[in-house]
Amino acid sequence: MTNLKAVPGPSTRAVHAGTSGPHAHNAIVQPVVQSATYTFADTQDLTQHQQATLLGQAGDRVDYGRYGNATVAEVERRLAALEGSAECVLFASGMAAVTTTLLALLGSGAHIVITDDSYRRTRQFCLTFLNRFGVETSVVAAADVGALAAAIRPNTRMLVSESPTNPYLRCLDLNAFAALGRKHNIYTLIDSTFATPLNCRPLEHGVDLVIHSATKYLGGHNDLLAGALCASAQLTGIVRQLQFLLGGVLDPQQAFLLGRGLKTLALRVQRQNENGQRVAEFLAAHPAVERVWYPGLPTHPDHKTARAQMRGYGGVVSFEVRGDLAAASRVVDRVKIPLIAPSLGGVESLIEQPALMSFFELDTAERLAVGIKDNLIRLALGIEDTADLIADLQQALASN
Ligand SMILES: Cc1ncc(COP(=O)(O)O)c(C=O)c1O
Image (cartoon, rainbow, N blue to C red; front, side, top):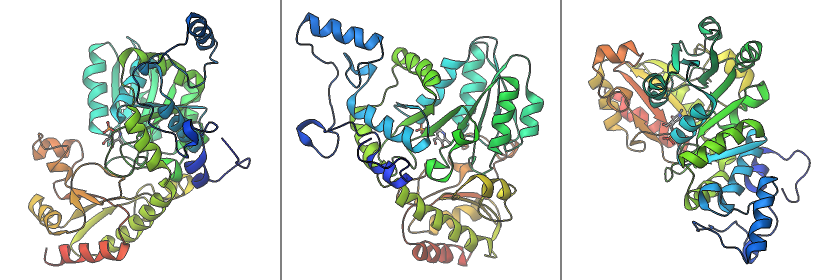
């Protein structure tokens, strides 16, 4: 980190942290180091590098692209500084971060507990794929530390949750979660994609592992896929070794875009927090809306927990309209600014009905069994002007 005070603020870190001295050609930004392999001047240069690598003293220099990249490494350091972790490992997607981390830290005979109302693919990976390799998974209610505690067995190795969750924005008491893990000597993992390090930093509460789908807020422009693990050097070291084998590394072009996106993270999240709060309040007062799920509203079941551990509540607002699946579709079809698409956290507002997006292959009864109502809409707010977004929702809800 160059020219920074002892404890720079998050926006300063988002712009400057992780920069390692002057870049090639004195470029202000780290160039895209687009190379699959790296050369050595002679055998002595090679053996010195190998020795330095063994001692962990090779810096950003590597011999091959799967073992590192200078563009990727700089973004890793910046994200670690934002999340408050010793290290960060970037991956080709959020799912690569989730799967590589779980595979690296779990083995046959282990048991894990995961909360419901989490990203469906993460649960699917645990319940189907890990199960084939002798790892058992229990699913318990989101935001319920008591339920997590009750599910712990002698062979439990990890507790996994999102906070806030998807799509109901349930918030877990992170102090209690981390304490539970410590008491039983079990890893605690939080998928903090919905929070971002601007709104919440789970490691400060004692959580061991933080994962992000960097595709969302961190990249912030709906134009890249990436994932991140932030944790101690010991844990990231174990995970990185498996990443070298599995190969889900981040491409330098994507890392460049992610690093560029990160620089405006604080500004974007500030606007998205404002949009989230104002839109949630508007929807809560609208007669065509049955229920709003937003942790910044006192009516949300986890408002107190969120207030205690979050600096803002994010840009995702889920709400149930009065009526059925078709009534919700009418609202989705009438809005003009939010675009119909999965994902969240980018500058463009996105809207979707979970019943018709992530849960399409399930019928209504199966969807209800996993808590997904037909009249539920997930609105992922971007950075557009709040008044425009509210006016748009007003016209979309007016005749419902
Ligand atoms: C909370 C959460 N975790 C993980 C993922 C997976 O990330 P990616 O799509 O970058 O693989 C997603 C994606 O939607 C998500 O919402």
